[in-house]
View: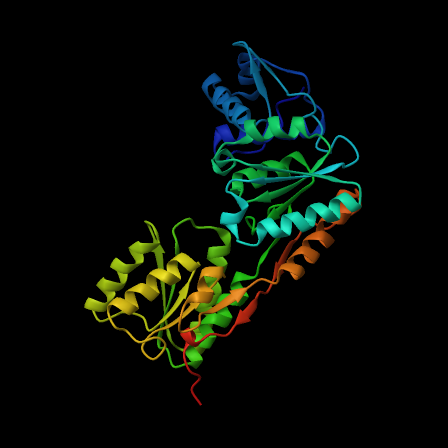
Length: 361
């Protein structure tokens, strides 16, 4: 093997990782990998650099370490193609599906029926470990147990999504992946929905609009912020983003502070129902009238919101539309047909509610 043609690194360890992955993907490197000393000498780097790179590959599940000196590839990882005809759909989720979105359980039941009618099995695997970083080794073991599967990834972090993309596996992300990641995905169009929400609040006379979201920094949350800011710029109103560092009730302390300082927003887009209810509770306790003094819109939906008065303005995904779009995405992958690895977005339905305010004419 010629190790002389190595691209210039941004970081030496990362350069070694990328180079070895390329050799593995091409099939040039398979079976036993040369020793640390051999790799270090041929690539003109230190053994510590090689060791760090091999450790990273092990964490990602690309290689296995056996003994102290030799590194071998797990069976089948020399190929970037699935092992054979797809026979099942495996749903991987880092959280219980009913906690991700209340209708996901129903959707998965309907999806299971569709799969069965077309001759495919379905397996759901929920574990918090899928939401952790550096899960490549865990994912590699899961793939070995389901070699002919298509993978539906729910609340899997970007590192896990990237692992599936780099392995060339059949996979669909239920959510928004990192931009540029070579994987197909389906998610709510948070950019469009938050643009619409901010526009509704501005049309109802709100002059300072806040998006309250969690600090998780999910890609969908970034899109939500972008859409809200565009609408505020267009309407010439103030845009505020508050990221929660604690649970949803911590928003109450933030509202207390902004109210005491005279800068409390009069329009709020709540990232989820728990945040909405915390804002609603604050307004009730401090006798802030909704929607006259405060307009609130919830970015997502929950059955609990049906009991709130005044009625809650929110966005609700049509389950049938979501299922049908997901099925149209999955079917060609399950049948090993050509498909385009692009993101797909669905605009949820806006459910008008009195909480958003009265239109200004």
